[in-house]
Image 1 (cartoon, rainbow, N blue to C red):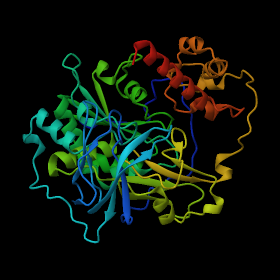
Image 2 (cartoon, rainbow, N blue to C red):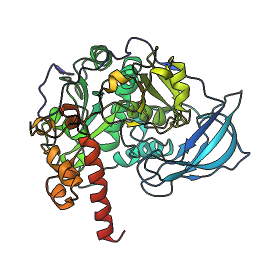
Image 3 (cartoon, rainbow, N blue to C red):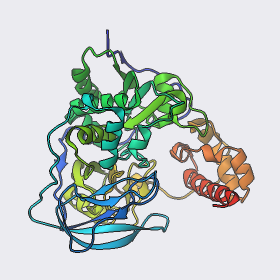
Image 4 (cartoon, rainbow, N blue to C red):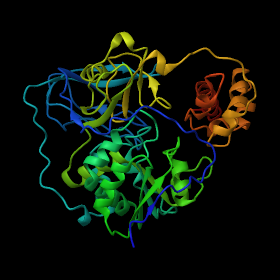
Length: 448
């Protein structure tokens, strides 16, 4: 009958938590935010090597002009998000202390874009041509770590892909950027899914939603109708339902081995915003110069989803949403579970910025911690079947070997353990630090 709707299909993985967050701003359309007087565009917005600048101070650029070129296999293009004049090539500090190059552009009054030519029918393109267009558009995973998409669309020959999954779960509270994209662009999303299927030779596509995204589900169903190659899967609202490996387990019933990629089980997972960008790049030659960002939290009066030029400071988004600075105790980039605290309001929107949250003291809650009472809630909550409390204790004690043996490197850093801990122990932060030390030790042993 085609396009089977699996209502409330039970997740096939153990662990995770139910998060009852605030109402997401789903009802209002995406608002386009004008660029600021200048933008700062980092040349590293992805996993891998930074791009090298190919412009100089004084150069005139248009929206979509290439300003950075890849320097390694795992790297990608960076484009101007505004038309204007290059003010300077500078460096900015990343979270963690490392510095990366960035291009500062003074925004012009006339916002002209680079011409892209006539639209192309993606069905007439070969997989190689699709990947090349995606590469030149600078597309990276826009829902997570920012892995260059053209590489994900080129799986190893010995690991054929039979299924492409769209991660439309958006399981963190507060965030709704992907949900609005689905509601407003379902045709482009489905087309982007089919482009990805063609690129990897997959015969089946799945659109996976959490059960509370009824508007998004209905929008997609109206597009796919009786299609036999695409199926909608509705999963319970459970965090971290959108985790790549757990989504594969829930939808396909396949387990990705520890340390392996989804291609090991014939699957490819892509985010909503990423696939819409893929469709636009392949069809219209449109590079990634903007993205949709959710602005939410108790310290803003107008939660909203904004279409924002890359390089705009987060302060501009907060002010557009009626930011109450006196009530805000923390600004988080991303979701409350896996996001990070902004180091400054001058931090800018990048390709991977999904949310800007202005949180109040009531939302943060008490920061006082108490000792572990061995209740086991963190163990029950961990979707990877780890014992987070033990790993954290081992790391704090400096017992790295014990932490590694207990599976520290398998941690998703999803935060389910910390969320469930009655003692409010910073478990995920402690394990993240342990993982960093273990990875550093591995690099040293390899002589890197």
